Image 1: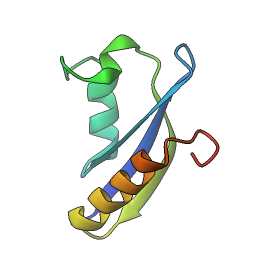
Image 2: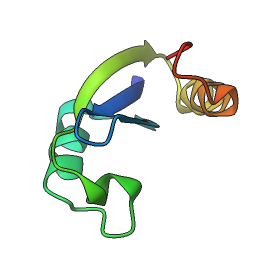
Image 3: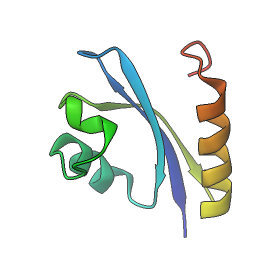
Image 4: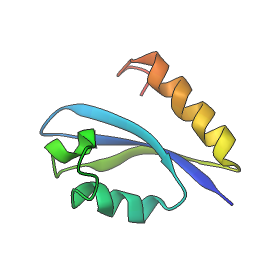
Length: 77
């Protein structure tokens, strides 16, 4: 099953959010509708997908997500 690593961007916050999922469009709709009550994405409604990558397994997606989060660099993103 395919997995996605994606980077959301909020223009109002000028912030990025990195995460992985199986269903990219459904997950974006959940972020925008504030379905995740304890998530960082609750603080804005203008999230859009800045980048996404298709990976062949959840393990690879999680490794890519962790790598990107460790970079802590807007330049890399």
